[in-house]
Length: 77
Image (cartoon, rainbow, N blue to C red; front, side, top):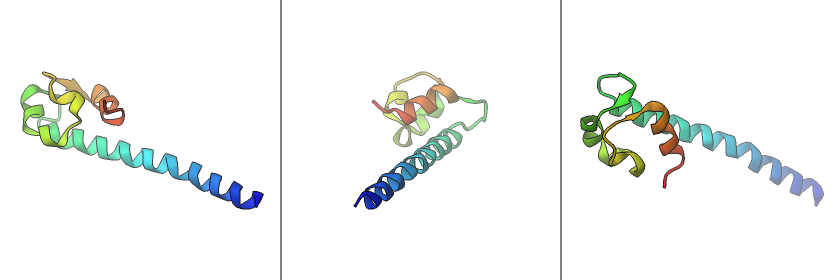
């Protein structure tokens, strides 16, 4: 019984970082596709063009850099 519990707990802990990495990759892809001029910042027009694909926390902003975007994407309100 203890062995089963240990294996179950270990497999859960190993799965969490994988999903976090997948979330980061999705966020990075969203930013890259929205940053049309590749300057590392989403302007108001770039945000407006990709509204339906961006986190709600950045949709109302005039601009957002990559670091702020990644934080908003990983921790949506």
